[in-house]
Amino acid sequence: MDGLLNLWQPFLLVTLRASCLLVFWPVWDHRLLPLPVKAASLLALSFCLTPVVAPHLPAWPSSLVGLLFMVGREVLLGFSLGLTLRFLLTGVQMAGNLVSLQMGFGMITLIDPQSPAQNTVLGDLLLRLAVLLFLVGEGHHFLLRLLVGSFTEVPMAADLALPGGLLPWLAGLGRWMWQVAVKLAAPLMALFFLVQVALGLVSRAVPQIQVMLLSFPLTIALGLFTLALLVSLLGPFLTEQFRALELPVAQGVQAFSR
Image (tube, rainbow, N blue to C red; front, top):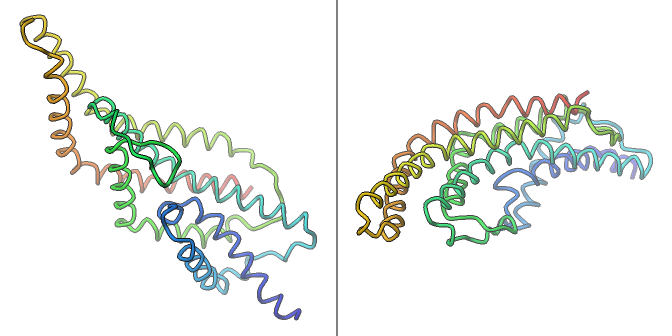
């Protein structure tokens, strides 16, 4: 029995960290993904990783309190590292929501099954494009390397102390999210501003023209046309942001390794 427990304990420790990280990662954390698929992928991944990272695993906690502290620390680690990619994707979705509101799609919202919130059509479209580009660019390989490297860089321990540099790091992620949203939405927002200025001048010069009747179809047509032209630039921009993802992830790992 003791030998069987010694074999299962490393597997359970690997499963604990893998589950805490995967639950906050895109695609895998989607609510529409069946639970048996999540469980099977988690167990298969943990089974493959256990022989590789077994030398870096600590001893099983000797008390229930120590085990609870270890679980709490792993959940905090997974939540923090998962937020890194989630902030980037949220910035892309915020840009789509802002453009939709300015374009006139504010009344067309969708109930996102992944989160109990309403999102616009363009916001959901840009989010799905971002996730697709992330997978095409082998971003999932980066996440798997992060999981494997975390066992050596952030050893598992029964310690629930909050890392000192965690809050400033999270604040930097929020600033990065807003920067991504502004950079994506800025060209269309500038276009909409110029359209409104032009319509205002037309209404002053020719009062007989019903500007309100022209503004909605004109804004939507120009917005969709410009968005179609900018989609070709979305790939390089998001690829650059995904490459820049390594720095905040490394900073988060460093905050927990101290």
